[in-house]
Amino acid sequence: MKQSSVKRKFESFGFCSSNPYDPRAQKELVLHISNQVQKGNDFTIKMYSWMKISILKQKIHKTTKLDEADFRILYKNQELSQNNEDLEDYGIKNHVTLKLMARKQGQQLYFINSIHNILEESKKTQEQFQNAKWAVEGAFMKGITPKLTDFGTQGTYILEDLNHKPVAIFKPYDEEAFAPNNPRGMRAKMNSPGLRQGILSGEGVDREVAAYLIDQLSGHYHNVPITDYVQICHPAFHEAEEYKQFQYEKIPIKEGSFQLYIKHDDNVGNFGSGLYPSIEAKKIAILDIRILNCDRNEENILVRKKKINQSVGQTRQNYDYFLIPIDHGYTFPDSFKICRDEVVWYHWGQMAQAFTQDEKSFIEKIDPIKDAEILREKVKLREICLRNARISTTLLKLGAQADLTIHDISEILYREDPDELSPIEIAISKAEYNYDNNIRVPKGYSNFKEKIFSNNLIQKSLEFDSSTLQNQERPKLGQTLIKLEVIRDEDENQSSNKDMLIKDTKKPQTSDKKLARVGSQQEIKKCTKPIEKVWNEDFFSHVTYFLQQIIEGKIQEKSQSPRKYRARYISEEVK
Image 1 (cartoon, helix red, strand yellow):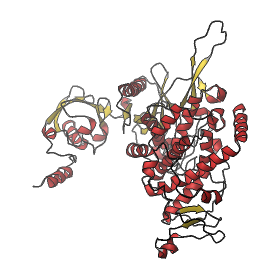
Image 2: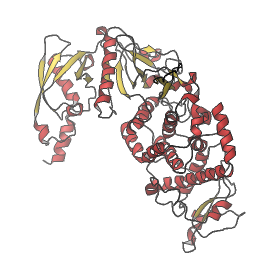
Image 3: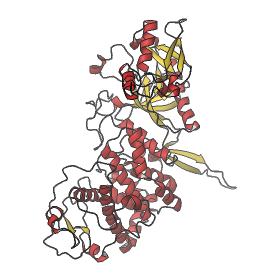
């Protein structure tokens, strides 16, 4: 019998799809079951590492006569809950002891399980997270319950230790705003439109974890608290009345984000923004640009003070200030409809300061493609949300290379008026139109993947007449209708002009170079299929080209009126 047919036969009997011919899989495991449900009735079960959890449960049921709904199997305080997983997925490769625990409500068995672990292998990180879980579980056993916060629009719970000190913040999927079990009265079906455009109910948990994952990939540069997925079983969590009938008498098991609580002195709303070091303020802004934060307010930036040693004769105590970003449920949206007032740091004076060399080096090392790949693997984000994060990160990298400030980049990224498109939205609309109509990017932009990480991108970007660029009409903020004129080489096939060429009758052609150019404002139909794919390099070459045009316009604007820029930034810092 062929190996593939044997494998299918194993799967049909409930075995896992791993290779049963692997030498490691031939080892029979003797699992000692510590029976906490039927005291004194411990027993052993023989299994193989490639067998599914469902087979283990069936063998336990056959031995104990307990229904599968009445017991839980724990290994190293983690429940073996996924029936389709095999023993090896839970790290069981040798003879081990498993705990058999009751699941009945009367026994008050509350627990916290890690699921979809995204934490790095760092021993310190793993220990911090595990210790926090154990502290909360111990508090549960002593009757200390999760506490629903008095503020916010979703179910946010403070989890305490035995000393009633906060240890972690838990946010369940089904208690987000407009999710089925929201405790604030804002209930709807899962994946309903949320409070922020571009984010659906039930998507906030994944974004909390994704923001930490981005920080973890960057060496914890942004100071996001450790965050991961967990399952928690406790009767204190909210269940809407219409859903209780489906729970029967079981304790509700919630899945959500578990974020370690960070000791702090206050939030930024109770301090003047001028107190914060430029590097701390810009760390927050860089993160928000990378993850497209739609809701960075004064309440979700924590401040931690550290005393500075006083010099001789000094009477007033001075402090160093450190900023900690939290609450990232409104990030990674599927649109760029974000206004400048939705990020509190936009008016801070630090944002008008140039990037330091260290900050430039950090931004240069950011790999938006790698970020998207890891996010796609580890968390559940829609494709267009990953695409948008890659675009915003590309803008950050291009802006830093061109010596723009965060304030300059923000003027491109965010809307000034809620009803008018931002410059980046206009750039994306043009790129989608070009891609949808098979219009090629200008010469010099075809190799985007190589150039996006080049230090000399600005200097070697355009390879067509600069006079042509100066003569074109730049789009104004808020304009939604764009016409493109495509000028093709004479030696190219003229018969394809009907599909590839949109002529501007008001302006003569001025160059024989390949150029996608902004012409008079005529209506263009929106792309029938928006470009959602995060890996589409042809589309991203168009995006990069139009972003480069906007950046060059910003540089030219600053060079023509430097005094105006300085006066405006100074006035905003005073505010």
